[in-house]
Every structure is written in structure tokens, then in C-alpha cells.
Image (cartoon, rainbow, N blue to C red):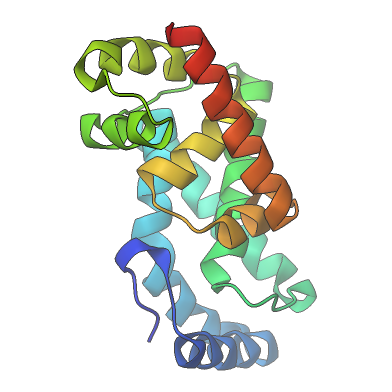
Length: 187
């Protein structure tokens, strides 16, 4: 089955998962395997952004309802099925912010902030930590998503691109532009 550490999967894992997806396309009752496999991590993804448990439960359920409805249109693109689910979840969260004016929550792990500072090739790690936390919290949603997925969730650019519906190169370029922006803002 699919490895969950750092969101990476082998070709065998992807092929096995794709077989499960194809079986679910033919028989929706088979979708339960995918639901059981991904519910918890999708719930955490949504909850981390909302910080409201009841809303996170509702949004996560909506993600799976939409996924089941749209499953016949799903096309394998060489990344885990979870990428498609995360794209749906991301869209649902954005819709919630837009429609209900829900408050966006940013949960920042200090270890990951140090990783961002190192990626920016800055030597004053401790001096910049608090500044980076404040700046990240104020980033626009699209920039924040890139930083979260790359540095907090440790996703590959290929998977980020699939989730956010952009090219892998665009995901890289945008991420490094954000890092350059952060670098200029902390000085």
C-alpha cells in the first residue's frame, strides 16, 4: 500500500493504489477503502487550516462526497490519489473562507521555520525566526499554501503542482519567489 511518510510513494505503491481507484470507479462501494485510507490525513489537512473541529469534520465529509461524485472523471497523473483529494480539500477550504468569511488559521512549526530560513541561505537563524513566523502568517492564501505544502508538509513539487493545478516548474518558481520575498522582508 501507499507509504505515508513524507507523502512519497513507489511506482508499485502507485500502481496498487490505481487498481483500487479503478475498482471504485466500477463499484462505488469500493470507495470505502480510499475513504478509510485518507480520511484522517485529509481531516488533519483541513483542521490545520480552520482550527475548528466541527467545520473540519464537515469540510472533510464534503471532500469525500465530491470525490465520490467526480470519481468517474478522475485521471491518473503519476502522483498519489491523495493529491486529487487534497486539491478538492484545498478548494473546499478556500470556498469556505470566501463564502462564510471563516478565519484562516496558520499553524507554524518552529522546526519548519528553521528549514525555510536555511533554504533562504540565511545565517542569522535565531534572529529571523520570529520575523519569518509573522510574515508567513500574513501571506496571501495562494503563497501560504505553497509554503505549507513544501516546508511544513514536505511535499514534492510534482505533488504540489498536481494539488494546486499548475506545472511542476511553476510550483518551484513560485515557491522560490516567495522565499526571495521573505528574504527581502526580514532585512
